Length: 252
Length: 82
Image (tube, rainbow over all chains, first blue to last red; front, side, top):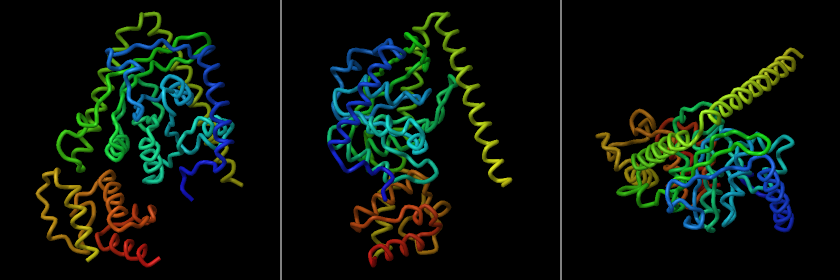
């Protein structure tokens, strides 16, 4: 069975989507309350096309929910690691039309599903670093976003988030100028073009991260650092517990 | 026939790489990484190209463990005969 297969019942899908959007909107109003900056007028939500790949740095599992709200001019789908669908967050992820990605293999089903939804003039959020990243360095982008953009003939908009989720605000988001399909693939559509498109996306994301950091006050930078450290420690504890559990099971 | 189509697809994917490989000399023993110059992303492009050309769905797990052009030809044959 395809890993990207969605539940068959469209009514249930619609209800789940509405609940997930309502939950995410409430969350955004209370906790995220993001302050949004635009690189230029071209980056403003009203000027973005319906068919669009949104690439974003990934700092927290709620990023898909947040981006689904911000970019909901047309249906937004996020690519998310298949593991996220397995726990208590599963219903929210499914409700938000997230597309499961198996990171252990070449997940062609996920790529095809993304292309299909883009061709239906929907939007797809991709985290091209391929994992949560709590550092200020942008990790090397995976080439999946470029491949999907090529297949779906889609523009790409880079988004950089400060990644501070705390009650009553603190999240800062910078939306970059969209990169058109022609700019991504100016000449050929081969493997080297794919690498060049990936490098271009990464370069634009790096510029965006510098742009956003310049907008933060010293206090905001300090809050961001503390918040990230706290989250990194929490993740480390979860990881350690997980490894301990696995060790225990192996002993048995 | 299959190998000819496969080489044609590979050439179109790798045309802009400028790696100096003569793709017309590929044969079933050619190694995908070392001799063809495929990376993970170009391998994905190849799979997509094969699926479009032959109107089949390749078993991705088998395709991702293929080492040679011959392995890919065998997977295509199996899919066509399935």
